[in-house]
Length: 118
Image (cartoon, rainbow, N blue to C red; front, side, top):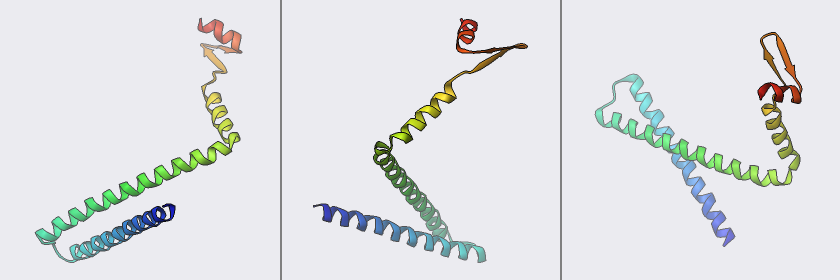
C-alpha cells in the first residue's frame, strides 16, 4: 500500500510539473507573438486563461511547500528542545519591560515598575 501511494504521489507531482512547464511555454509563445503584433481576440482570451491557470498552479505550489515545511518543523522541532527554548526565551525577552521613562525620571527594577504602574 505504501509503495503504491508513494508512486501515486510522485506521478501526481510529476504531472503538475509537466503541466506548469507546458503552461509557461504557451504563455511565452503568446507573449512573443504579442511583441510583434496585436493578438487576435481568441489568442488574447487564451492568454488570460493561461495566466489565471498559472496563478492557480503557483498558489498550489505555495500551499504544498507551506504544508510540507510546517510538517517538517513539527517533526524536527519535537527532537530539538533547545530550539523551542530559544523561541520561548526570545518571545519572553521581547515582552519584558526593563525600564520606563517618566519625564526626566528613569524607572528601573521590577518593584519600582510595579509601584509606578499601580
